[in-house]
Length: 295
Ligand code: TA6
Image 1 (cartoon, rainbow, N blue to C red):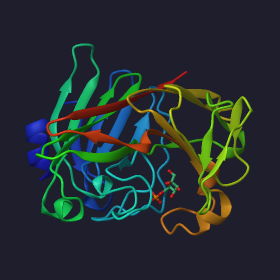
Image 2: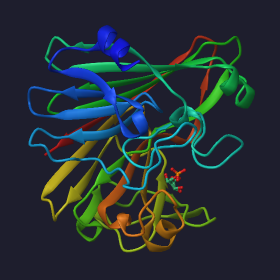
Image 3: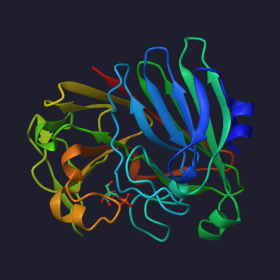
Image 4: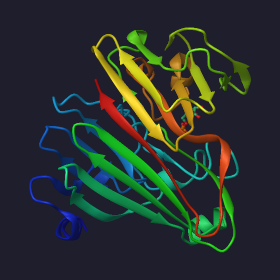
């Protein structure tokens, strides 16, 4: 399978497939700037994004499973068509299905681009009786852009939620903050609650379990890692909501695919449509994208 994938999609020196964890096929992109990216066909799951100097910007748990039917813990989980708990598997089924590559190419400006797609099948239709085509597009240069596209391939409208549930690697959560959400209303979803709140601070700091949904958030937010001395800007289009999450101590202990102390080295800043569903008519198309830029 790997040989066939490389025959069809490999680009010598810049793009190749290789067996990843547990032999799952993984596309590896290597940009001339020194930046690199790894994305599994399982879930179209980006598990590594290294900036040009080689620093890994994403967190993936050392205890993550890499198995059929199970989500990878970390990287950029693709959430669709459900966010959180509900009648479908948590955060939907897109992240636990095997996607297939549609293209790998070098864009005119030199960025490395790849598209993975997922169509409905008997398994998804049994859970969610709609025809769809999902596409995940990555574009790697000295920045990373990730785009999710949803097409309604059926004859009836449907409503969905979607997100990039991105886990960022930080040197120490005690020195990490999220900027750009000052004073904006959010829903605190820690535990079973859904408590409205606002935070008048310039930056969200982390000293407890944090799980906030900001509906209608700004298109730009940023993650500051004071210990590693970088600011990572997230610029989105079509992704109208932001979720900020760190499981902290007790929830980390309850997650079998997450180390008890790994909360100290990660924070999720998620971009998507998670508060209100997107209604898509037959043949309708929705796209949302986020560009990640280290400053
Ligand atoms: O986005 C935050 C959240 O909904 C948290 O409540 C937590 O459950 C997290 O997602 C991880 O969910 P997962 O299903 O990947 O364990």
